[in-house]
Image (tube, rainbow, N blue to C red; front, top):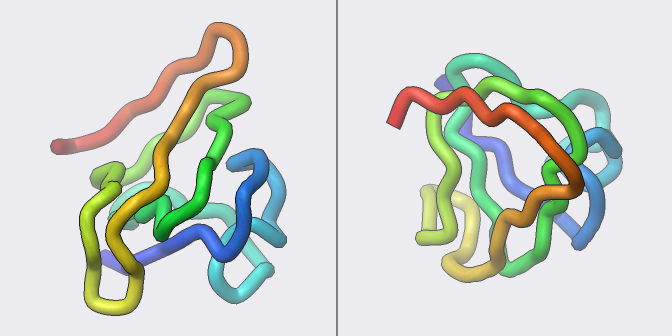
Length: 75
C-alpha cells in the first residue's frame, strides 16, 4: 500500500497531477487530494480516497467527478 497524493489541481488521468509524475494511483494505494481539486475523469480503482492528512499529504482539497465514472475503493 502506497500513499499517493496530488501535487496540483487537475484530472486523475494526468500523471503530472500525482507525486512523482510518472504513474497514476492504482489498486492498493491510499489517494489524497492534498489541498487540491482532483477531477475523476474515468473509471479507477484504489484502496481509499482521502481529504484528511496522510504521512506526507496535507489535509484539504476535494475529489469531483466529470461525467459518469466508476470509482472502486476498499473503504
